[in-house]
Image (cartoon, rainbow, N blue to C red; front, side):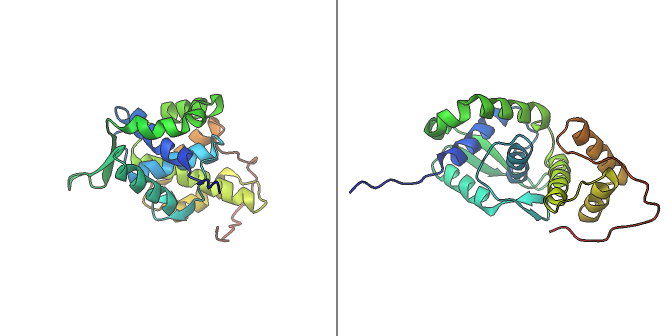
Length: 205
């Protein structure tokens, strides 16, 4: 009897690829940055990474992605190093074995669509801090969530929800981020309507 194993090499190889390519670019490619970059790759650049993100304290999060990272680290393809007390968090670094797992999904990584998407992801978002990625990923999550509910969100609606979810960011920073994502066409905003003082206090799921 032939037995085949359904091993998600694409997911493992993607972690290794990002660790390798961001090693000299990202200010701290850690667990938070990994979550947000993979979310953006999946939602903005339409690469099927196989994850199901939900909204947590630091923005879109999937526990399966952390499990995949643990496995890639167990194989010795990346190292996950705790940072010092000043910066906190972790840093994901490639090892000399990083290409071993990449080779398991070379067709996926080298496909034109995937390669172009990763190139664009890194050039656009790779040098951002985890905090900046958190705000951008959360903004994309809000816009996508509203659209899934059948709405055509305006800038003010996206702003209101992001402001509620991320009060630690200034209103100016949130507005700047929404404008940036809209200009890049990474979110789609409906034409702003003048609603006066009408406020929609419904929650997003």
